[in-house]
Every structure is written in C-alpha cells, then in structure tokens.
Amino acid sequence: MKPRGPLMIEHRLIENMIEIIKQKVKEIKNTGKVDSLFVDTAVDFIKIYADKTHHGKEEYILFRDCSKKDMSDEDTKIMNELIEEHKYGRKNVAELVEAKEKFVKGDNTLNIIIEKLNALVEFYPKHIEKEDKVFFPNSERYFTEEELQEMLKEFWEFDKTMIHKKYKLVVEQFYQSRRGADSVI
Ligand SMILES: [Fe+2]
Ligand SMILES: [Fe+2]
Image (cartoon, rainbow, N blue to C red):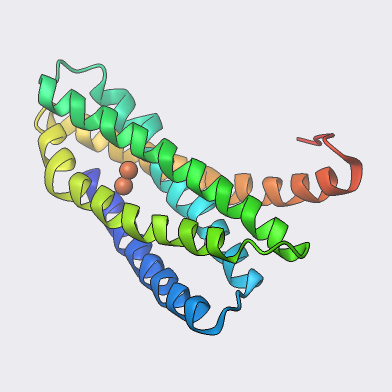
C-alpha cells in the first residue's frame, strides 16, 4: 500500500459524512428546526477525524515531506492551495460552532448554521477530488518506494496517538468550561 491508500479510505468516510450533512441541511430547511446534537456530532467528526486525524497526516507528514522535494511549480501551487483549503475548513467549522452556541442560547442563527453546513458540503468533495485525482498521484512521483513505505509507517504511528489526543481534549474542555481558561494538559 502507498500513503495515499489510508488517505483515500479516509476520504470515503468523510464523503459519507458529508452526504449525511447534506440530507440534514434539507431537513433543517424543511422543518425550520435544528438538532444541536447532530451539529455537535458533525463538528466532532470534522474536527477530530477530518481535520486532526486526516488533514493532520497530510500536513504534518505528506506535505512536510513534499516540501523537502524539488516539486514542480504546478505541484507546489496545488499543495499550497490544499493547505489554504484546510484553513478555510477550520474557519468554517469555528463559525459553525459559534452559530450553534448562539442558537442554543436562543439567538436565531439558523441561517448561519445552514450556510456553514452547506459550505462543508460544497468544500469537501472538491478538495478530496483534487487530492485523489491530482495531488496524491503527482506527489508520489517524487518519492522512492522506500520513502513511501516510511511515510506510511509514520501515518500508522500518527493515527495511534489520535484516540489519546481526542479524550485529553474531551477532559480539557470539561475543565475549561468549569474553571474558565485553565488547561490541565
Ligand atoms: Fe486535504
Ligand atoms: Fe484529504
């Protein structure tokens, strides 16, 4: 297996979640009601799985190694676009969380929630296609088979840390909500 293997498997799960979000947006529009628990679950998926776990491996391992190679201007341009798109995704999720929190407190932020969920639905498929069809195959050409296998090994090691990071974050968030901004981690 090449490093794009696990990344593409993760893309398929992200696509499934995006499809669910798409359906939920239709429901929200039809009923005028939003299930804040669904928004929390979607945010958790995007933050922990799509961003920390998946974009994490892309940025901290794949893109890091790519930037050590003498890539063509075109491939470098695509990689920089992908990094910017990750930043856009994070900003969008932060705005979604803010709108959901205001909604729970009684503000009418329904349209913002719909807009931010829709932005995710629009953004991810295009980003994923650019990686699957263009950047992953292009970038692999700069690496030897041995280097690709090393990268894959580093991916597995990275994944092993995620469950621990996730639950440290859960505990940290409880402490933060009880004690203000103090962090225990
Ligand atoms: Fe990405
Ligand atoms: Fe990706």
